[in-house]
Image 1 (cartoon, rainbow, N blue to C red):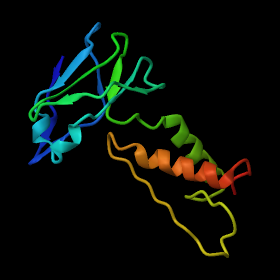
Image 2 (cartoon, rainbow, N blue to C red; image 1 turned 90 degrees about the vertical axis):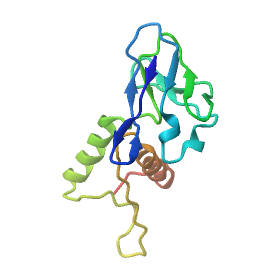
Image 3 (spheres, one colour; image 1 turned 45 degrees about the horizontal axis):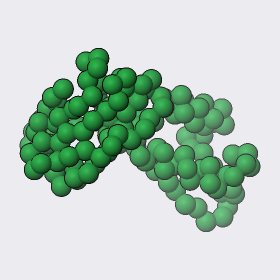
Length: 146
């Protein structure tokens, strides 16, 4: 299956995409060379999923200077650069914050020095949310969040 990266202004964008043809196991990004950092395609391994929830890396792909191609499992239904952060996790965090009349999660004592962690997300940029979740889990290590 061949895919063209989206164009907006002079920037080539890419994000989450679906494998839409049953039995497809080879995907080619025809205009990968037009990306802002085309060298990033070298040996890149996208993610694949059967159900859109559980993700695994594909084998590293091949960038020939123009096109990026990679192989996926024939039963994979979704392919993406980075797995999307599950909406139910965002809803759980929002629910916690709303229940405590806060717009943030506070760990520890507000009277002590503070570290503020911010994370936003553009399509295909879910890494920041995974990072924040990991920091919270590491700091909290079994304690209740307050």
